Image (cartoon, one colour):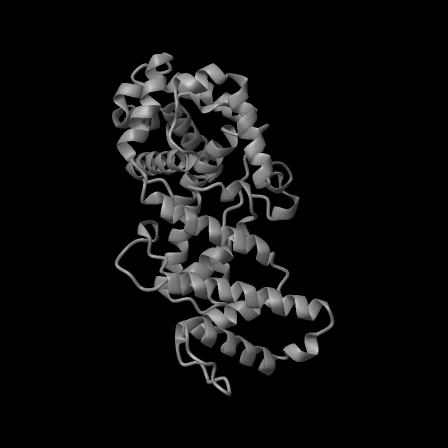
Length: 341
């Protein structure tokens, strides 16, 4: 893998703005409005959830590493910025994307075994496809992506920074889960992987302990408020330092201001204390340290704010996801257009 993300094809060719992505998708729909009208699809977020689940199902059957499954999801997103979904068989593309991703992540799978497992998973939608069709689709996938196949993932950043922020095993695992979840959003096409990783760390630090998974809405209001406070203080401190006001943001002064700010954010309706108290909550201390680290870095905090909002919005959307309806809508256009043969 190319070591420098900033010089990578991912940054140069596969990072978009939200407006860019919206325009691209609108243009794809405009290519054949009759087809769009005949075969309505669920919301894009629901499609992303479904595709993520299918890639994971196939990958787990074959013992594929998580990073390869993540790369396959990125390939799928890239391909669907260039080709309308209704003109493809998503199950064939999922199979091919995973096959190609395993090659690129150096954990190759035999094409016949992969095809056999895929056909057993989706017998009614892939019954006419064999290994040769996967090989043809692989060529199309590589061609559409202009052979730009290297994908930089947030996992490496997370592992590199877990000691820096003294993350516990549970916090690292939760951050890893958040990174897994972000592949069900547009974030891999919008922001650099290190921004995603740092957002995952922040959410792992502020999410309140719960028996629910993040996808089930574990982000309580208190945790979200704490995340917003941390990002706002990091922005304020960075702005003050950039404008020459760094003298007032020395280490002791900044810690006192952060403590005061977090105390206000975590004790709604209470009058602020005359003097900031020493932080005794370990989680709160970690969040403060994280905010101070962000302020001293060159990280795009506004991008982290956007990532946080997108992930929280996604978790809320996940609660309305209907797997059966999504599956039926996809199968409908596959069979009607004979894409299963």
